[in-house]
Length: 319
Image (tube, rainbow, N blue to C red; front, side, top):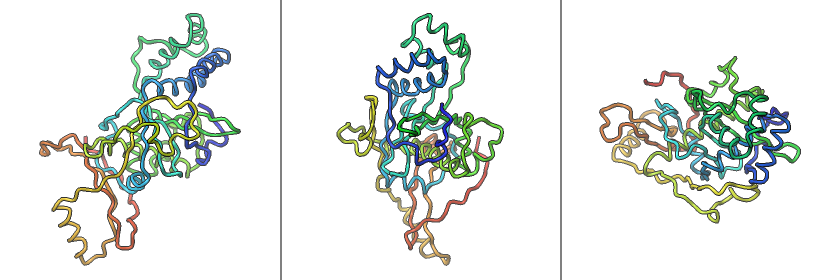
């Protein structure tokens, strides 16, 4: 991935990701051979992997607004199901950039790229110059990689960060968690300002919430066609022909218990200021029919149309 002067400014992070056509993929591989560049190979693998296995989420602004005002409670990112190993998150909100979240074993996927684009001699050269990236015999851990693109001087460059489950769990619990990772090369050599680190934390947590949201049966997204897409199509270069799902907010089903609690809140001596949304994971065995599933409680606006500010609490996630 590239270390760029404009990487720290989110306004340079693109709204529509540009992918490589088959011809451009071949040219990129030839360039990687010529320059003996592992970064070019990694960029190629990112687009190649998404073209093979990816899906796109087109996310309604009303929903992303609600999710930004909702908190995670007692969950592990590793417990969240993924509908695909490569997901493009596209938001209707013009202030939210588009990004990929991918889960893969780097060497294993790199080997697939090499087999499709190189001959035996080219693989030998790359192995000598770039390390044993085609060693399929060694045990390899799965990586989770967050990737976006940066527009600089008319070109789009990939920017990728390693974000393992425990990092995403920490970010979901505290906005300042990334600041505590001193000495860990989470950003792969990139230097970000405090506001940009906070914005990255917001985007990662938002992706986490979207994955949890769509895992709930009544919120499962519907697949849509290219013609039904809203702003996720114009200006896109070589978008892979992969499934696209529309993720929207739905009316909350309020139970009698919900209505009674809201009545008590209105009648309480303290002023009701609204309630932030939250997710809940049913972990305890006493939840016989719901154990191992998530539920979502949307935000409730206060009388003045606002919501309480989030209060971050650091607490141990149950084992």
